Image (cartoon, rainbow, N blue to C red):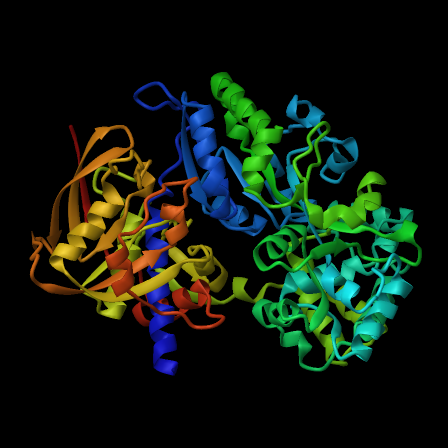
Length: 631
């Protein structure tokens, strides 16, 4: 198994290459494509945004040439781009967000406070993002609701009433435990679970006058003046969390529980309540027939109940956009579309969310029927979600769970870390890269993508490697690489496959990835979505913008032998190409059946990158893997 784990980790690194084709050098502000289209680049925090949103934007704005890139869900990623002298794209998104984290980006972003789109928000939600000088540079996209999910069928079966306050919540847990059912459980392993349950159990305190004043100070801190925890609100937070862990009957070892291990007993009717989202509650109700509903984080009375929410993402606009009035106008039109009812529905992509915008109602979630009082009274708490608070919540939360910290010790440890937080991955230098490779996409592909693919294929010894969906988001630069910077090269949630394929089947793979299909579906759409290969070269003709025809395939410069057998490595996300709202190009079934997936529980692509580079110590020299002809 250890050998298989190492193989799978190394295989997954090749995922990075495909996305690097999309990270080409930024267009200068106001630049236009040859056909006079205005060029707008947009970085999306997750591939899920690409499915419905990107084709909708392309259809709505045919006069705009979009470049969509899957980026990273942290402000630190954008800080790193700027520290290396790179420009940030025209529109950026991030889900894990706080003004505290975003402050160093302020001088590089537009002030959106006086724009028409800002006027569509409820003011209370914009105030959370207002800087001390009055500027608003980040706009929150529709809210996920992440609270307590309950199996209503179990409550009915055992004649246990749904709780309406904290005392009733504890009583329900006790009642279920008495009949052999776990009352409440969560996937405690993750930082977001620790953060959300810690804040969720004490929202009335965090939303008090003292709590909001402390948050404003924290969000406005500077490098020279770090803000620790206050001595009024936060001691109560840890006292309530300590009691919460006791009341939900936390057991030793539960701190290691992950999502699937937590949810399976819920599906089986062995757990009554879990922490989760309204979107998942609706999915479970529809797909599994388990009547799942959302309950709030409970206060002492029903009037103290709150929903914990967080934006699906925050959006900001590069200040360089202001240098060209036509481009600025185009970006503002795009923002208006994004925050319209139709736009937010495409961002949500079918999930249950609430809107922060006036006159926009985009959810009809049956899962939220028992929390309408919270929604009507605006008891929507937006989580505090700075990078350091995520990490510290997990560290301190786990130590509370294991009994190492009581409430007082937890407060002291959290306070000490928040004023002197150090990311261990940001300090460790893995290697020093001697040569920089641009990810600007040319008629011969991306040098950075090729370099990365060649490096990984060399360490794996595969004959051919093909990356077929967005899987990386940074360039290759000359200089030191820390572990954190190496992690930012990779995106998440990709699959890796190996298989023995004939040359004829290799040709069919390339045909699937390049040629427009008879029904008009197009697997490429943009040059930055073209497959990146190693050990294989291919020639295409671009006969119409964004449409290509496969002309020739060679292996290390020699003609592809249709009868030969090749060890092929495939990396990508099927849904990216197959989803009907995106490329709508399913992989040929017989080719899919032959591939073998290398999956190991809990491995991450960041681990893959680390392990591969420990072998190579350097990104290898790139090759010209594609030739694009005009015809």
